[in-house]
Length: 324
Image (cartoon, rainbow, N blue to C red; front, side, top):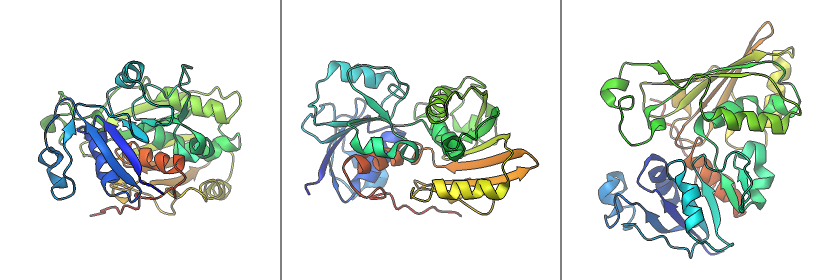
């Protein structure tokens, strides 16, 4: 099999550069071009200095169309604009990492929501993938098994904290080190944009889902990772729920129910999601941890690419966490 020819647009930001690092070491991929408006003409290893010795590629402002897969790692609204203005052959598969195509909106291209634990079979047949949001990934993986058995029948309360890379590379008051360090804050309470895709999946999986989803996102004083604590009412026993989760995720290589309570360092720098369940009377707590740049973005994009091209799902993604 010939190697997959990949192009990246937006290859100098956090998600684009993380994607580049993954694809450089993917055994079945060759990178045709890495597009960046701000760094066009510069050698990649001079911008991403950790890649010294790994690549001789330069950033470019030219978009090549003779490729097999295109990754869009741009700001929200930019992907829709690009695909409106630039013609790509029908054979080119597209994976968008923005929110432009996550909510069903029609249009000439049919984007499949790219959460493999929910849509794996559809992803295998898809030409266009809308990669999920990072918060949305952590939250949905916490509740998919319940939805699969119509067991999500109470309001959902979510408190979730993300690292500073979740804010993107552009500096602003709340992403600056001196503000983030030794600090914690809530933002976009009840209104975060990822709520729409969470509700969409809940409604797709469980007919007539109409419960409240109350989401309180927080900015953490660390670089990467998301810890989401989800609580709801469940009348199932803890043993029954644990068996349900183990069964649901048995065929999914990156999502695991673990025995003991979890922390971020177990999954940072990996494409894994760890889940932990605990019950107090009828109150169920589900803790979900992911790396926001990997399972919440670029790692999941590569996972989707593997499925689209008939590769082993874990190819290029067997990454090891650094827990200390």
